[in-house]
Image (cartoon, rainbow, N blue to C red; front, side):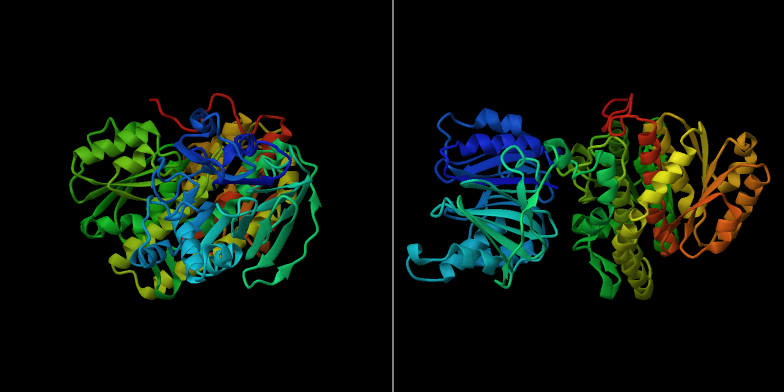
Amino acid sequence: MCGIFAYTGKKGKDAGGILLNGLLSLEYRGYDSAGIYMPESGSVKTPGAVAELRKKIPKDFKGKSGIAHLRWATHGEPTAKNAHPHSDCGGEIWVVHNGIIENFKELKEKLSKAGHTFKSDSDTEVLAHLVEEKLSAQGGSASGRNFEKAALAALNEVRGTYGIALQYKKEPDRIIAARMGSPIVLGLGDGEHFIASDPSPILPHTRKVVFLEDGEVAVITPESHRIFRLDATKVKRKATEIDWSAEEAQKGGYEHFMLKEIMEGPEVVRNTLRGRLIEEKGLAKLGGLEGVTKQLEKVDRIIMVACGTASYAGMVGEYMLEEHARIPVEVEIGSEFRYRKAVINERTAVVGISQSGETLDTLEALREGKRHGALTLGIVNTVGSTIARETDAGVYNHAGPEISVASTKAFLSQMTALALLTIFLGRQRGMTQKEGKEIARELKALPEKIEKILEQRGAIEKLAKKYSKNRDFLYIGRKYNYAVAFEGAIKLKEISYIHAEGCGAGEMKHGPIAMIDEHFPTMAIATKDSVYEKMISNIHEIKARKGPVIAIATEGDKEIARLVDDVMYVPQTIEMLSPILNVVPLQLFAYYFAKEKGLNVDRPRNLAKSVTVE
C-alpha cells in the first residue's frame, strides 16, 4: 500500500512544496522510500520517508507540476534505485505506482529484447518503458506522438493491480492517472488539479473530489479533467464534496486505523493470493521459494517460530501443513526457542513469521536454526526487513502497512500465506490435484465471505456494548480454531485491558471451568467442522454452570442459537480455512468493546508495533 500524489497548476505555486507536504499526510501508507519528479527540475529519490527526501531536495528544485511517491516495498528492496518515480530509457516518461504488476517479468523480457535498459528491480519500471515503446511505435516525429494513446495502449497490456500517475516531460501540464484494484482520487481545484491515493493530501487545497473506479483512466491539466475507460469510452461523473479532516481521510473515514484495517481484510486476502493461485491445476506459485524448491523437497520437519499474534497464525499453519502436506510441524515462541537445545539438522526448515520482519526473538531463532544447518524461510510483510534479508527464501504477505498496534489484517494475510504454502508443499508430497483445486477454490472465495461478515459489524457493535461491563472472558476452540481462541483473547486484552483467556475447549475441564459463573462469559468458536459435536458438549458444560456463551457459528445453524445466549454467524468454508473467517467477528468484537470503554484503540498502553528488544 504505497502513497501517490500528483499536482498540476498555473497559480505560480511551488509544486515541490505542495507535493512534499502532501506526502507527509500519506506517510501512514508507506515509509520505505520516497521520491519526487518535476519536469522542470528532474527527480530526487531516497530510502526512508519524507524527512529524508526533504533533506536531499536542492534549493532550486522548482516547478508547476509533478508526481511524488511513498513506497511500501513489494518487488525489490527499499533502496534509492527502487524508489519511485521510475522512468523510461530517455528519462521522459515517469511513473508512480501502487499495486503489483503480475506480468512484469514477461513484459520486462519483451522490452529488454526490444533494447530497453532497466535500472531497478521494481515491477513498476516496466510501465514507463512500455509507454515509451508505445510512443515509439506511433512513428513520425516526436512532436506528433500522442502521450494519452500510448499510455492507454500500455495499460491494456498490463495485468495486476495498480493506482498510477504518469507524466511526460514534453507535456509537463498533463498528468495521466489510472486505477485497477488500487484507489485513485482526483482533486478539482481552481486552476489546479490533483491525483492521490486517498483524499488526505488533497483536502488542504480543495474538498471537491472524484473517485475513479476500476478500469478507468483520467487526464488532468491545470484547467480540466477527463475520465474514460480502458476501451476509450468516455465517463461522466459528478464531483463529491468531502467533509472529512485530513486525519479522517488517512483513515478512510473510519474512526480508527484498527477498524480501517479490519475492513481491508478482503483486499488483503486478495493481494496475498494475487498471482499465486493456479486454480485450474490446484497449484500455488510462490516465486520467493523457487530458488529453494529442491531443498524443500528434502525437508522432513518444519519448525515455525513467531511471537504473539504471528505465533497463532503459525499454530493454524501447523494443522494445515500436517493434515494436507503431511509434514511434521512444531510451533515455537521465538523468545523460548532461543534458549532450548533444539534438535535441528539440514532436513529441517525453520520458518519465521513476523509482520515487521524485525521481531528480535524471531530473528534470533532463525539465526539459531541457520547455525545448525537448517533451511530458513520468512513469512513477512516488509520487503527489505532483516528477516527478509537473512533468511534463505520466503513469502511476502503484501498486506500493506499496518498502523494500529493490534494486528488484524496481517494475521489474515499470514494464515492465507500459510494456506498457499500448504498447497505448494502438499503438491510436492502427494496432495491430489482434486484436493489442491478444492483448497484453491475456497481460498479464492474467502474475500467475498469476509465481506459478508463485515456487513454484520452493526450487530457486533451492539453485542460488544451488551458485554462491555464484563471484566473476564474465556475463549474456547478446538483443532484449527484452537489458535483462534488465543487470538480472540489477546485482541480483547491488549486493547481493552481486561482479563481474557484463550483455552483449548478440551482442556477447559482441567482448570478454566472453575472460573465460570453467571458473570464470566465464554466466546465459543463452534462452526460446523469435524469437532462441532465436541464443541456443543463443551457449551453444554458451561451453560450447566450458568455461564453466558457467545458463539461463532456457521450460517444456517439454528440449533446453536437455541443453546447459547448470542451468536455471530460466518459463511461456510472448508475446515482448514475456517480460522480466516472466524477471527474476523472476534476482531470486530474486540474493537467495539474497547471503543465502548473510550480507550485508545490504535495505541494501547505499554505495547509497541514492532518488538526489537528482548
